[in-house]
Length: 212
Image (cartoon, rainbow, N blue to C red; front, side, top):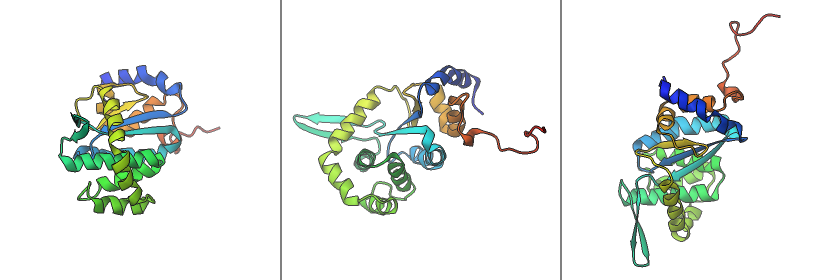
């Protein structure tokens, strides 16, 4: 159950959802963070599949990574090692060159595999969702660094202390993020206020149908 403080914060944010056609959901995560992968597969992916017409998703695969500059050379340090840096970059490439739904399906597939950031996994999941694996590799070698620097800049603008971290309409609120981790669909429905998607409404039955 969502706590009282979070509900108050949510109510104060309702006007944000009313001002736009879609609710923007931003996810700050890491490709080898177990909790991130679970959240993507069990909450973000199914809810987005249900409310695709109402949501704009913005995935930022960076988390607690850091930029390491030595002269003109740029490297990245990642919390779960170089394999995660590679995974973050491949995710960034998928997000950059594909529709949100396709990119999310690819990432969700990868996060469900035993070796989440291996080329074998990327090739398998790319084939499943209709992405060319070769395009992801080419992107990682040509645009990957630029994309990750962009994700680093995005992440610097958000004061998160853990991942997965979720924001709505670019509103950074730890209470809301914490609630969204556990009850993502409930939070989404509350943020739509007076115009919730059909999936937010209770099913029609004898107890809520008024007789004429």
